[in-house]
Image 1 (cartoon, one colour):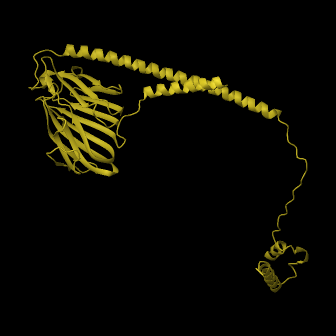
Image 2: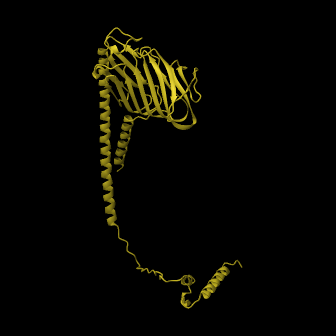
Image 3: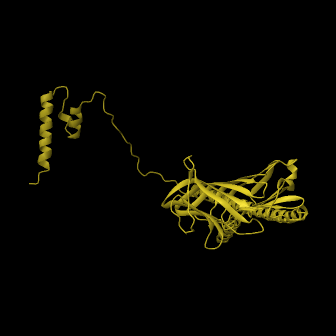
Length: 366
């Protein structure tokens, strides 16, 4: 029996390890959680991109929220026109811009510029150092030279959420609008990158791309890559005199194969976990049934207890016409010489007084 228990223990430990591998613990701040993070991006003909992020966020014991962008001249040249608006109560409350970076910002103030690490940072004060609330904010900015223009296609390769982002989200959604419509939807090529492989992206119209992701965990990234007809962009600070499609398809095919292998391993792990759980369930069920049968047999062999003395119990129910005086007489054990039909109210009152007197006398201290 001890050997079986040891085997079951090893099974349970193994399953726990598998489940932890499948669903790692989230490494995020427990004081912040996004119910939804939504991106609305408009690609412009000059190669820039206007972005609005909508944060529906639970905040606890926090003074300042922020988001940083790695500076990368191969992806963009600058970020400008930063604004932060509080839309929690349905009204649009534009926060006050602060030109100097600081670790903590006053409530309803925001900053957009380089921080102490020479990264571009958007930060704003929420004023919830010792309290909690759910707030809705809109963060808008323009990314200059976000589009690279090639001879055959224009390319947007943008990380909407970086690895340094410390807040988990229940859901992430996004829409990217192109400057004009393509001749057909198939002229737009789209790819999405994320570590947990839990997102979807589609060209839903000849000028629109949409993506969505559930259960985003902090410390991951959300990256979108799209190729679209180069004539949509009039000019760009990142113009390239070469073709792009073949190289991108080659890269994305390689990464897609790697992602499919990763999904396959994940499915195999999940299948093994299911088999292990089923095996443990069967083992526990068998031992449970054996234990029940053993206990039933043991009960059947026990000697039946028989009372050594037969006792008959009687209980008298009071008559429906019983009077309070009769109840009093029963209480004082004088029912034998009491007749309710012959005693007057005066007699009953005198009897009650005598009874009370006796009671008082009985409990006297002397």
